Amino acid sequence: MDLPLIWAVLIAVAVMLYVLLDGMDLGVGMLSAFAASDEERNMMNATIEPVWDGNETWLILGGGGLFAAFPLAYAVIMPAVYLPLLLMLAALIFRGVAFEFRHKAVRKPTRLFWNGAFYGGSFAAAFAQGVILGAFITGIETDGRAFAGGEFDWLSPFSLLTGVSVAIGYVLLGACWLVLKTEGETQAKAKRFGARALVGVSLCFALVSIATLFIDPRVTERWGVSMNHIEPGKLLLLAPIPFVGLLAAVQLLRDLTGFAMRRAAPDWRPYVLAATVFLSGYLGLAVSLFPWLVPFQFTIWDAAARDNALGLMLAGAAVMLPAILAYTAYVYSLFWGKVKPGDGYHA
Image 1 (cartoon, rainbow, N blue to C red):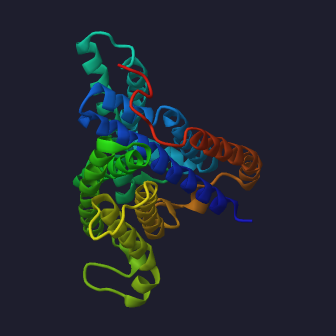
Image 2: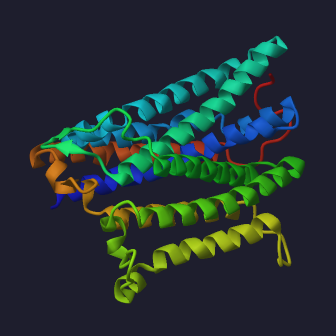
Image 3: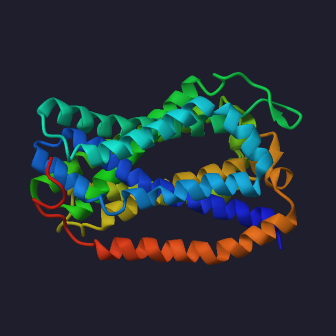
């Protein structure tokens, strides 16, 4: 049994669930800045109040799993992205505090401050996650088995581009979630923001894809694409991954705009389609970087802990992961349905 590969898949799944779930509520947080009134803002936030803190469980599982199962990768990656990582954690903490305090603010200036902290924390966390992703893709300088770069190696035009891309992507997820959970003018507004965010995501995806050609040829060689040639055999073999994402994006745009549709799309479909677009990009990234855990330095097997430790942790994960999945499914099913005006707290 290939324990390092199993753990790599488990961590990848945890990170993907975090992106789809917490990315959604970070997107709602950013979109609530455009609410027309406190009542609409409260209603938007009520769609994520029962689940937002539980969504962050998957981030803990991803980071904790990396530390326990791949200690070498953890020791190399963390120093390389300390500053954006600290920004992300501070933003998530500040956002959590603002989530509670904005409901208790009595004076208008205080309420405006905590509302702004909620919007800003949501954006800062999303942007920092994208910057970390960009720094990871561009590679990390090492000396032997230790990080050997500078404290600002993570800062590059490419990482800033991925930071903006992730933030826009989370807005898309948040807008599609609001389509599912709200009605009337709030839902119509969410569809408009979702359509704009989808255009932004498509543009950013194209720019990131082009930029990766200039980073390292190993990022795209798996696809048979380089600056001076294309290998049709490799490209056609993996083409279904971006093709499914493209089809999902086209259908999502139709659902959000109602273009050339005889009847309205079901409210659940935009979020499923947005998740499909994200999954397509995520699988594409995994294909591009596999088997590197620290790109172009250490593979999954180079960075893994000993098999006896991985096996022991896997026994615990076999118990805990189904329990967490069951609890998450239960909470979402318990609070299923539309949010009405007046639901949630009142600022």
